[in-house]
Length: 312
Ligand code: PSU
Ligand code: MN
Image (cartoon, rainbow, N blue to C red; front, side):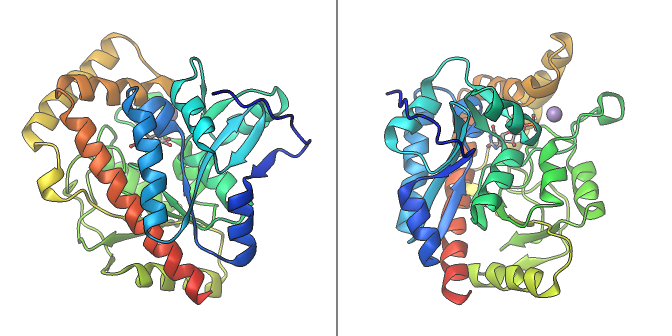
């Protein structure tokens, strides 16, 4: 279904439900749309979009899936709009830098972690759930390809619950960049940085928390300390029973990286290309691991948002 609401002139439009929740200080969880439009195959993507919203509601919070529709940044989508971002051909992938152009030129697109974080924070939402963050790509020394997710999280006051960064990336380099940029990273019931499809990336973490209330306490400390407006990354691993078989992961990822190089895939296209290659190369097993990760993150994000709204 296509909604054809006219722009009211303001580039940011929260849904009625999200506005009401924010006005009352009720918990709200932002959800990104790139994972739906560009990260998951149809028709599963729409089912997932609806399911993630339901998980947020079960945790007692209001979901706010974020996307740009006809030049308006929408904070909270109805089921018809979720269907639109799941099925519309040619929907763009919008990072932070794309928002002014998309707004001015009345474009429609799904928002990445960088654009979603920025828009959520602007709307007054503090907690955001996704799958795996973008980061420093392998071969970054030549390509200079580092996701805008990292830069945005270094200057946006938002809590992102994720299963680490996508394992297609250079994970140690990404962690180094997060440290340099002052982004706080804590493991949720783990001492190791999660590996997106895998329970662990093998990289150690400095901080570990056991409960959503501790994430809310760190958020209060961020505000009390009053430093630069950095993010909090809550790294929540996919359970070992639901992870992708590590040997299969390593083999198919190596094939995917070789195929991307052969086909000269670069820029915004590389992440969707690699994710799609993994889905096909693992007969859908990577998709199930990806979904298990996103579901778990969404549940924890709902709990953190609920704890945060009770105490602030
Ligand atoms: N997490 C997933 N699937 C995805 C993404 C994250 O489980 O498709 C998306 C996010 O929107 C993230 C983007 O911001 O991939 C990173 O893209 P790039 O590497 O081009 O910055
Ligand atoms: Mn990139």
